[in-house]
Length: 451
Ligand code: SAH
Image 1: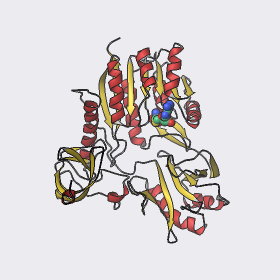
Image 2: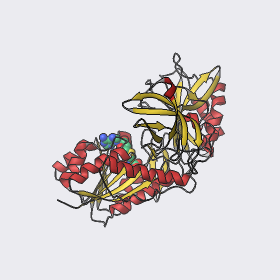
Image 3: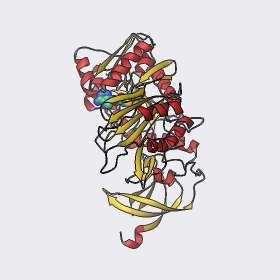
Image 4: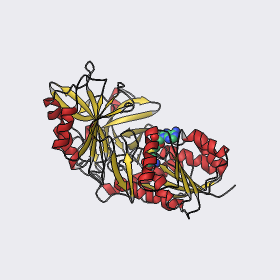
């Protein structure tokens, strides 16, 4: 490509797995964030990597009818949301298509009817957890996100995906941190680097974790008390130390400075204890929709032994236990297992057992010892299920498998493997857990058709 060709007009003909517009130039796909199918756009090419070209959107020459004005003022630079420029019903349609394409292209499945994505009536202010980068420039403290693919911070914390109470709390923090002269981390100085906020949607309670770059000689009790006094919804302020700049935001130990170190929240009829380290779905309303689907697909009659692999704090396990003989949950994070056990007690559910360990090791061991589940539920992280787990499912041959996935690509890969071992995809239901973003959640039912 010569330099005159760096800016071209491109017709967008489809979508990538994360909601970018895709057009073709000289036979190669060009990915354009912010462009919609059917649009004619002017783009500037970035560098080509592995045959993939990312184009930067310069101008929309002809707009698609589904294009809407993004609600957020920093939408184009923030990177937290990818789809605010697309009408919500069209977002739901796009997510259905992303799942369908992945099943076809990666899974090799033809003619699978993917159900319409189950969306929200009010697709805003749904996030119950967020982390924000704290920084100080020219004496001013700010809380914000990183611009996508760069290290420049967007000087505004998110206002549209969180509740009003969380937004107000975040707004009040820079002044408070200033007044209390709290050290802020920089390339050279130690201090606060991130703030994590978790909110219990059902109770309105908020837990805050101040994440420090290293142990500080600073007493946080005064600011913690003031935060809780000014914002009665904040029930606890904790600190955590994480020297690593990349990777997970939270380091190991959580120390309570004031109030509580955990939250209680409710999904459907169940109450859950949530520790800062434990995974909990970020959108309570849609989680209930998702779990109800998982329960429906499990089609339990009360006699089944069920395995819930990647069970987190035991949410799906408890949802299923009421209609099963017994549920065994498997999860790698020790705190999550403690939460799961506490949650079973809290909800007076006794026919569950939780095992800490990697699902890829634990399930094969259980199968080796003769465990014979009739239903297996998996809800793995983005990288999908490890092969040993899938192989032990094929070995033990449960009647039904419910696969909850946050990544259509690994979902399709894993379903393909299971299909070669006698399972057939029966239902595919995308659920919009992350409105305005390109993320897609999905619940799939597979059943055994061959031995
Ligand atoms: N089903 C739960 C959690 C799903 S998220 C819910 O809906 O809330 C995926 C979970 O898998 C996380 O809790 C994560 O800690 C856990 N996990 C990640 N890798 C794992 C592995 N190899 N074995 C078991 N659990 C794992």
